[in-house]
Image (cartoon, rainbow, N blue to C red; front, top):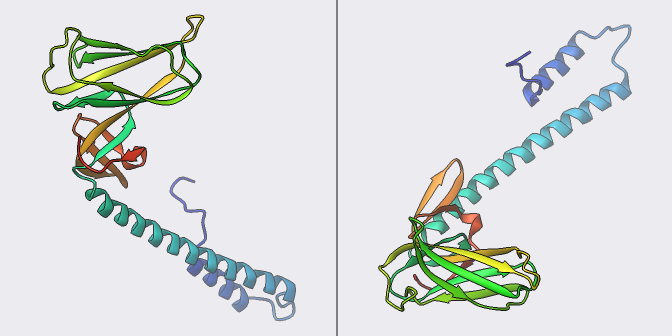
Length: 206
């Protein structure tokens, strides 16, 4: 039935066990083997409950520790998976990872409204991680306004088939949020991601 807890806690088990002893048939007392088995079950139940309590305490402590440490990250630059980049007047580093060698790798910088800003052609790139540097200029070489932009990466092999490529972006942490026992970092580019998604932490802000 709904609402009925099927788990028997320590107090309930002890109450049932003592009641059983109290009302056992004197002419047919509880078998020693069964008696020992029930005591063993009681002992195991008590140990499991103690372990569960200790684990809960450890998890609570760890969450509190993570929250405290997360606040120390405010102002630091981090690398995470994403496409939103923040331009603050300095060159922007965009990391990427190729699943296999690519004959062409292209990075297109666009505004948040989807307007084209700059296309960066890298040519051939080997499998693995790499870096793209955008100097903050458009196709004509003019500096763009500071703000948030998007980067779209594409890669193809010699036959023109698409190659899987993912991007890692750098942004500065501006705040920390705690929700549903999860620690989130708030980034300057407007993203909010779990603390666990940070791939690298740099010395200072971008």
